[in-house]
Image (cartoon, rainbow, N blue to C red; front, top):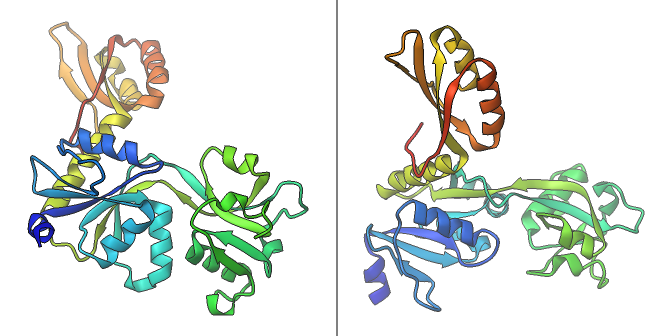
Length: 303
C-alpha cells in the first residue's frame, strides 16, 4: 500500500535497468533536469523536482508495462516495441513519439559462416532460435508465402540469452539476434543473411495515458537530443553574399540575420549539425565569411 501511495498522481517513467541503452538514457534524464537518487537494489526512484517516478525495468518488458499497465512513458529499443506490436496487433497500447538517435542496431537472420546458406529462405522448415519470437514468426510466415503464423513450417524456438551460441551447440540451424558492431556474431562463427528490423532507442508513451507531464518531458528530451546533434554557428558576411551563405547555413528553420555598424555587412547565426560543421566552416570561408565562431548548445527548445 505504501508503494501505491508513493506512485499515486505521479507520471510513471520506465527506464532500462541495465544493458546497452541504460547509460545513454540516464544521461538524457540528467540533461532534462530529472533529478533522482536510486537506492541500491531498488527498481523505483522518486524524482525530486517533478511528480515523476522512475521504474527500472528490462528493456524487453517496457512496452508491456506501457501498453498494458499503468506506466505512462518510457525508453526502450524500437525492436522491443515492434515485438510487442506484432504480438498484440491492433490491441497494442504503445505509441512511439521520438527517435532518440542512440543504441542503433539491427535484428538480423544469422547462420553459420562456414555453411552454404546465403538467403533466409533456405531456413524455411528448419530450426531458428531467437528471443524475438513474434517478429521472427511473422518474418518467416511472410517468407513462406502465407503470412499466417499458425501455418508456420519453420520451427521458431525461444531462448532468453546467448542466442548466438545456439548454432554451435546444435540447437538451431540459424538464429535471429540483435547486431551492433557484429563482433559477437563473428566470434560465434555466424554471418548475417537478412535483416528483420532496424532498431534505435525510442521514447514511447501509453495511448491510454492522460498525464499532462508527458508533453513536458517529451519537449525536454527533444531539446536535449537537439542540443547534442547541433552547434550554433555565428559569422559575419558581406550583405551581397548573404543569400549564398544562407544556403550553406539554412538553420533548422531559418538563420538569424542582424545588421552590423560596418556598412554592407551582416551577422548571421544558425544551427548546424555537428557532423557537418567543419565542411560548413570551409564553405563559409570561401564565400567571404569572417569571424566564424562555433558554440556548443547546452539545451534547446526548437520545433
